[in-house]
Image (cartoon, rainbow, N blue to C red; front, side, top):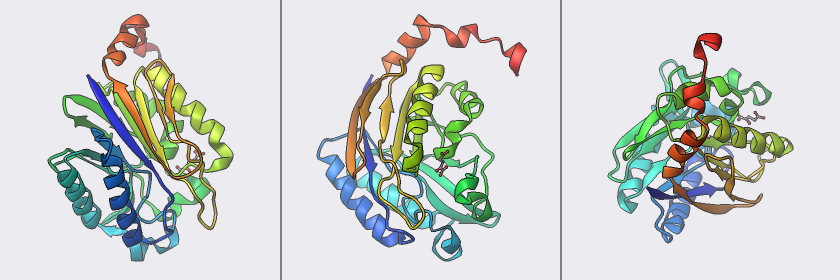
Length: 261
Ligand SMILES: O=C(O)CCC(=O)C(=O)O
């Protein structure tokens, strides 16, 4: 099975959800010129890291962003991994990914589990505690958000549910670009799955972001990689490769969970 994905690597207007929605609308229309099967956005594409103003600008129960993403999916008949958005609920504000199918039906939701202290996320956001495993047509996928990729045990747990593709929206800063690349390649090799990772680019008052959105195949080859600037990155996934790699080196058969779980 072949699928084409489009990753929208974009700069984000700091704390301006309306401006960002307008930009996403334009970028999605542009991406659709190449008719991908799925479009993906970066982490917190609505507000950026304007965390101190989340009380004002976070989306109440993700309602506005969910309706926006649903309408985009329906209009363009394309699956959407809605990066993540700030989502205010009774228990706190979460960094939440929503996934939609081409009919506009919500297929997935994942709240970032590991909050990143270096950017003071734990002061302003609440951590999720649920796995992010959801369908994409006949396939199962998993989601991890940015810092989550430093926790291989969490990702393995989700891949063991049967995921063949791991989606990673991020706002990964430039100074640790080399960690970003190595961690994504490692997650792909050890889990023998596709890793589709969409980072933002540009700057906010505190950070410069790395770009370098990447698609890594289950053998660990980087099949597409963006530069530092805004770009729509396309990649063709050959999903039969997951099973081929898993049969060649049967890591999932050879695991000894009785020794380490
Ligand atoms: O782990 C890192 O170095 C970056 C993580 C990050 O920026 C985030 O989770 O937002």
